[in-house]
Length: 285
Image (tube, rainbow, N blue to C red):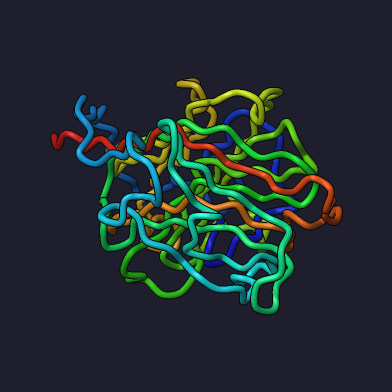
């Protein structure tokens, strides 16, 4: 999801799409061609530097989570109004539940929540693990993702976006992991994305993970490598991922991608359930 959560109608259903082999502009073999960093095989600490196990009840912990609130479409013509209400984001029995509901709020016919760690959890590199069960039904658009905290290189997509998990309800069994930059994003047909079929994503919890190092973004589902995007060493237009990012969890309704095949109002309410969120620090080498 995003300040622009649009995502492609061009998403490619393949297991690994690396950044090294798409088009002549990606040739890094010639004389004087820019070279990316060497993969030092970075590891990660075994104890989280930041985590929420949701071992409490009520609203999400306000020392860890804030909210994006409003109903302006969020750059993707989304139809929900994001609230900070316990009706849309609550913790109980060890689970965070984000609920999209069919109800009128302001000028919108749906409500939901968009939780953010901005200013409370911002990181440069690391391992990000989220165990979640997804909503289902035509019109839902859940996402677990990351945005830059400072937008040092400019507005989206110049400063980048990392999608740890993205799903649309009309395409029930397909889970997407993506990254977006000025050089690589869907509107110019160069997006970096991979897709995996998960037949029980809405009935069982699965582990969604990204390992972010100076060398690459690598995305995993249930610890299986699905996605790899390697730093080509061509500057921020290709690799803006050298600044701090924060996490977002949300369930959108409709929008340019989620609403492509309409919305089934009979499915609501719909929940994304999160068992835990854990962030592990990268060990410097």
